[in-house]
Amino acid sequence: MDRSENNKIVEATIPPCCLKAQAYSPDAELEGNCHATVVSGWFTERDNDDKKMYFNNPMWPGEAHSLEVQEILFKERSDYQEVLVFESATYGKVLVLDGILQLTERDEFAYQEMISHLPLCSIKSPKNVLVVGGGDGGVLREVARHPTVENIDICEIDQMVIDVAKKFFPDLAVGFEDPRVHLQVEDALEFIRRVPKGKYDAVIVDSSDPVGPAQELVERPFFEMIANALRPGGVLCNMAESMWLHTHLINDMLSACRDVFKGSVHYAWASVPTYPSGVIGFILCSTEGPPVDFRNPVNPIEKFEGALENQSEPSFYNSEIHKAAFALPSFVKKQVSCL
Ligand code: SPD
Image (cartoon, rainbow, N blue to C red):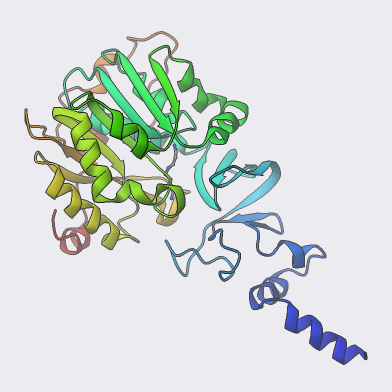
């Protein structure tokens, strides 16, 4: 076999994405790594399916955000997904599930505070709260700021996410230490099916993106079960992606929610620099019953400040941000028909 023939064989066996990656950075180890999320010291969100093209995620095709990696701290496959933790150069430790960034130490508070306080500050004296997903504990930490809350149930499917959070993200996993928290490791649909009608004042769905284990959490049967689990005038806050990237998905979720929830349905958003497009949205719904005006917090967070020992103030959320979160750009009003 001569050299040119040999070269031809090598080119035929390396997939085109690897060749493209080699052109970027001819690292010795690259051939074996180019289908990973960490290449040449940089993490880039990508689809976890190795057959897909380099750095292309169907949730945000044609774009990718990267973070410089200092050290990979954990990488294992659970029964549900690949779990990765790394130390980044500029955002602290980062949690990644199935190739998609879930949180960074530097900006996690914006998401956890908004998804928790938007619903809980919209109703008077929430007592019973369910968190779906949220295995890192950050939402629990925020819900626990509310002194009226007596019971916090959490249903997370993946024990490995909880274990990893306790080991690498103690500032989030501290949420599990609150005595009001009751953890169930299970598929959320199975859990919610058993919940007595009207049990919760608020349900918060802190899921990963709707590919893989979280797919069912944006569909109508799931919303119907949540509506059943809420008391009259109870509230749901559901992670609802980016208005820059996912107006179709947002439209679908909103129209399913409008059919199911007979109270009010709104969309709100917040800035989170490490999520795709730098923003993330939330769908807020209430069931039929005492009306809920999400845009005006009747249970302002400021009145709890200093109420619980050892608690710092929220870093992102306040009543002004709450009201502002419901102001939508004109293109979103046009594209999201049912707002
Ligand atoms: N595109 C990523 C959306 C991630 C939403 N869940 C984050 C979990 C943080 N508790």
